[in-house]
Length: 452
View 1 (cartoon, rainbow, N blue to C red):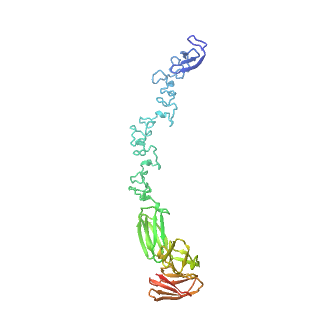
View 2 (cartoon, rainbow, N blue to C red):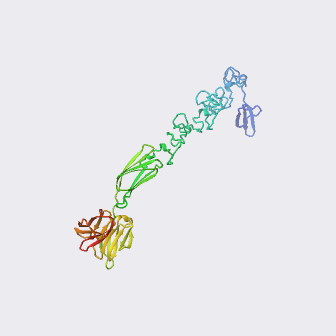
View 3 (cartoon, one colour):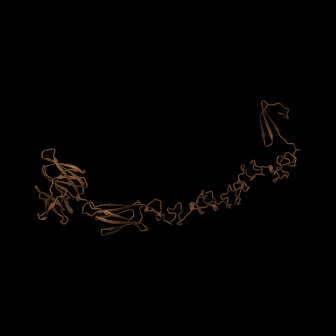
């Protein structure tokens, strides 16, 4: 490297240029750092614009007009006022750095210095760049100026407007009831009271949960015992606290009840009914055809007798067809055992009356006359009886004479009755309530005590 300081043939490790004054910095091996500068020939014309370098205000960029707007001695075509690397002559925003020259709307003015609405606030700082608002008023502090905010009183920087009507969702009140949609439990139907009886978040006036098929549950409870006429119809709703009305028609009844959650029609006779459920404040009705079934009497079959495990005893077998347990088993009024089984055996010694008593006494009592080992068992049920007494007779009899006496010993019924399936039926429907004795005139006559 030739140097003006008389040094020559020096090995240089690194060269740097300082742009501010075109100074060259040379780092050498063992000889330190040397400086120098590049200069141009003042009598030459580097840019060929007809202006010699020595007087050209921009010697490396042609500018024969030598324009210098600010008079600082640097030609406009090579001046970079904002030092962003883009000369003013080509810079779309010469007073603000924007080396990327971003110009979103393509109008030749850089985004960083554009004021689209001409309100004196640059767009990048303007809270409403398309609507003039030099005061930059923003009452809800959401960053959107009042003049272009679709909801100026409720902060909504996202400006969401689902229906595109120019009113932001956060302040829209579609039904005009004074409750904004985002807080209104029924945004399309006015309900300033926001009543929501069932607490499901949907206002009463637009809550259609009552239309669901599973909203109504209707349950029937049949007569519990023969002749009691105590059937029940229960109605329950899931969509509660609405003004429901239930109307029941049938068996000479026409009853209406109002409710909001559940209601019951009680003490209903056996028969068919129609129940209709409606709402008193809107057009809705659903009807049901229902039946209260008659209660079946106690029904127990005597299955037979076998020799017992001890002398002079017998084992009696029974099967319960209908009846509500637990059952008390008594022999001559003495409790032998209690069971919930539908089939069971009882071992007995001696003579007397075996009774099987259900937990619901109104179903009747099963009675069996026991005359000792080897006796043919005779059973009668239900006892108490309501309309008809059924007597089970083991053996192969085709008919049996039946007589019924009241508590005074008066004969009130007598009939040679056919035996069907080892059973005879004795009518009690016309007899008044009381105690009766039923006599079966078989080879070994049997007398049964019956209550009505």
